[in-house]
Length: 334
Ligand SMILES: Nc1nc2c(c(=O)[nH]1)N[C@H]1C(S)=C(S)[C@@H](COP(=O)(O)O)O[C@H]1N2
Ligand SMILES: [Mo]
Image: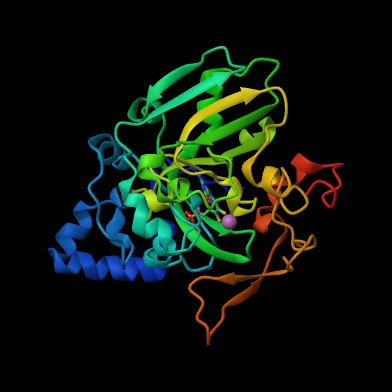
């Protein structure tokens, strides 16, 4: 079973911390008081200090309170190394802030993420509009280290902090008509340089969707943080979806609306180029993009002179989702 959820009391350091991180944490702790500090900091109080180059950020009080109860490393990435924070936060796709990979880091700071309201509506018995902290309150945060595979054939390994979307949907109680879930990103032209520019093909707001069973799959995560800290704006603060077996564009950022619906939603990329981007968009090395191969990916960091090319895996290596697509022709349903 891929997802292991240890009760907080049962965490033991050597089980959940890769050696390199463990060693750098020991060094860090040695600097702040040695063995006494080690003993006083149980693993379950792990925080951003385990990640080398993470820029500290001021998080809202509710986030800091949540961090204390976080279940660390419920999903790990085996022996794959975690992408440095610097790369994960400076090589982004977030077209609301521009189409260059550096634009989100440069411009997303303008996005006002507090206060933030999320609407849950449509085919549910308990619709509602929630302040973000109230939405998150009933859920324990988990750290999950997932591969993120962009349809452009690059990838990263990111430690997310979040909770399963299924928990939120269950609370809203989908009714018998609910077959799909659609998600919408906040639209705030004053704060979004890329929306104002008028150069974009996108009919804002950015919209994504999942079939209800995909949305309910235990791997599907709503993230509020990464690298042990609050989500940076360029990565989709304050609430984004992470669907690790699908191409990155399904993992919609800065969500303000979650709507349960009967019909398959019209998603942003599918609307722009349906022959290139399908509704499912499962990572599949055997189905090429019409303009490039999907058999391999460039794992970041990857230099011009030291390219780090790795084979792409079916469902991005999350093969436990295969049963969701039994009987479906994945060439037609790309
Ligand atoms: N609202 C919104 N969500 C988005 C995008 C976007 O342009 N707008 N880009 C997507 C794409 S193409 C990818 S690969 C991932 C990138 O996430 P990251 O920048 O956190 O790595 O976000 C996805 N979510
Ligand atoms: Mo992407």
